[in-house]
Length: 446
Image (cartoon, rainbow, N blue to C red):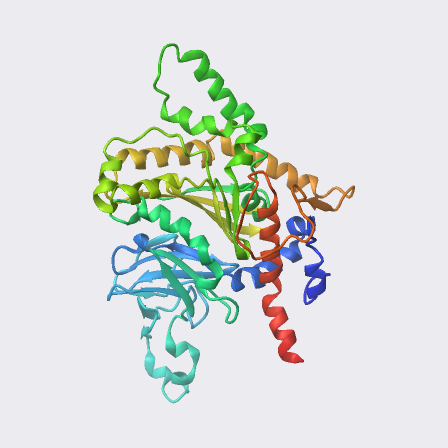
């Protein structure tokens, strides 16, 4: 048994007011506990309902290490189920997505299940007569995940009982999802393409923290985005039209003062976003015809309000980031203590001009793809950190920028845009959800 298993105090001691112990990034036992406690206690993103357009459509996901699948039933309802045959435990669906037709069929012994998970048929069923099979969990079929919420077509699930309801867990942070959906003249998003998938050799929390780290872009991305801007400045001549690619790259070189003034908003339970009053997405060229379509749906005042909200990155704790102005969701999927699979999804705004979707796809390729230049800057930093944290010279990671003594947790506040408080906010949530069920068991035993 290691130092942290069944030791609530040791887990809590990993996080201090303005620093965290390196073990949260490099210790395999801590990672195991995240899979067993943090993720099952949190509301975790599963996918989008548009990925389940037809009956029989399914997608697969994991919550911690537990495989689940979401499926569209024949009556149109969506079900989230444990991806495990109740017979021998074989995964029912091994692909990322697909259409199973009218039923799922286990590839091992051909047990079959309706698309709501209920048991449909068993070969040689007479062999189970008078065995008490009808009293066994296997007779039910695929076990449903009890806590599921579909919010504006975004599917979330929570494995463990107790803890916070969906509404209490996310609270006002859902306004980012609202804004992204409302950017469609029809109030609807769809996924039309596979995501960019990119393996990162680092701990998943490094990626989450980086989304609201505003003191690195002008440094880490100087060789990539900075070079792109210099080349355009040199070559543009008399042109007054800035190419879309340069519009996407250039804001990464914004100075510290820009980010300080743009602000960060923190919410309870580890959620927060950059770009409160301004963001790197604020000055893109207008798309012809888009505003008129928005006005036709919402009226001019509401259309201006929706499009005037240009939040940069919104973190939904524990492991997704939503970028509303370019309709991107990044999913940081933990694989091992030093390995994270990142999926970058692009959503299409239904009823909006095609150029908006083109810009979002371009942004995803330029910034988040394994072939991008900006994303590689970040990956280089993550890999160096994963290696550097094994140094015994200092076992603590400093998150002290703009820290104030007595700083409150689980509050909603707008703060300086270069503060590291959102990172501290995330680690407060990390402790809460890492220890929630351990605390509940300890209290029940008393």
